Image (cartoon, rainbow, N blue to C red):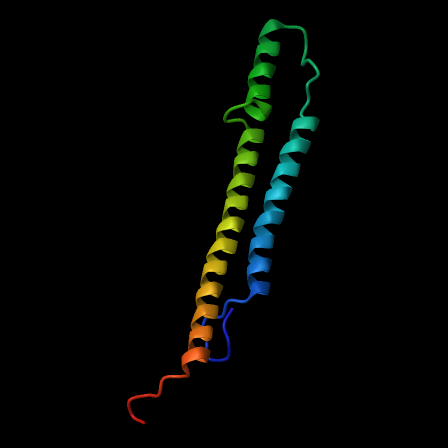
Length: 116
């Protein structure tokens, strides 16, 4: 967010909005993965061995443990949560520096410019 002078301004509301969007995206990705896993057809496609093998291959790609669509959706959700955590921690650091600077200025008074 910027102020009237186009300077970057970080507010807790802005941080909460950005981090909250990543957290909601993570939750939605997890829900999508869970729904996909539940809804993916597990009924046999027939009785032929080759059809059942093909079905198993697709099932592994959809809901298997590694590299499947469900596993990837959960990985994306984890990445979104990591981004939310990063936004919050980085903003906390920046807001802390701003608060420290403001406290220091209040204690020591403002510095006059050399022209004065």
